[in-house]
Image 1 (cartoon, rainbow, N blue to C red):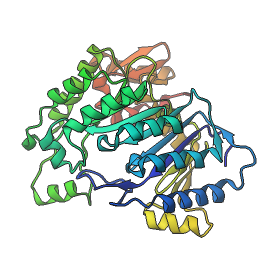
Image 2: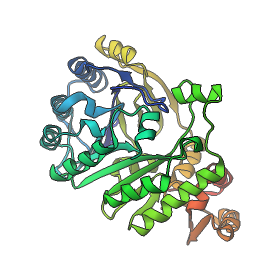
Image 3: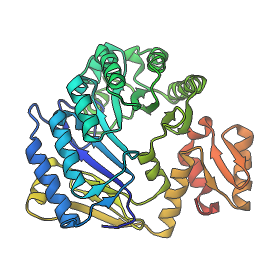
Length: 375
């Protein structure tokens, strides 16, 4: 384990059902095998780290999935207890739990707070019942409202909404209504993601049959820009392509990814990075579980990140954020047409993209890569 890693991700794969758009590593279970999962997680920690004489200090922990809240109140508590055998963190640390609205109960919020969860990422996705049904979500629109009130009453000062935009026009989804309803609840943080059609998902199969059409570029752009305008007017900082925060509520854990700092990943399909090598675990739950239970590291593969790839990733990740990247004289010449087009701003030797530029992120990052310096 690289001692420089100060950020930890744990992938909890269980879900009540698979959403129509989801291609993540999940395991659909009505009855979640909590003890089995935690035994496998303990085995992976032991295989990777060994016997921890002194827990390592970390700054953030993020429990994603899947649906970590599907472990139940006691399961989440036991998971945090296990992590404390290997890691330690202060009361100010960001400890995030992804949760579905239907899992948010008075018992759960009290248990999460007592266990040390400080931030909840709420997978709302939409407030439209028809859309939730189309997405195969397990919760109702009214359960989102209930979850928000329970998080507030439970003492969570930091929590986030996830919403998905750019849905097929045939659904008749009113994106502005969803956005307005989300902003009216004054969340400290928003994560907004454009729908992508992934092969092998229910949505991918519908698209293959011609039952749905992806939103065209103009529709995607319109909804992205309306989200930017609406959130900015409500006092949010659009600090990364998909993320908006009220003052003091930027996602610290996710920022570690964008800065390219080392992090550890545990659980099925989890990735880790030690500063030069990226590794990833077996994706299927059973394969990960069996490998860990056998006392072996459940790694599926790894790759060395050379200088060229590291620079490309640094540019791409930097341009995703309002911090941008540093550019040399040649780079400043490259970005001048972008500034004139309204795609970028140049502040000294740093260039950052505007929302219009973010819509062209891939091509702009590729064009800029040869002319960048350090982050």
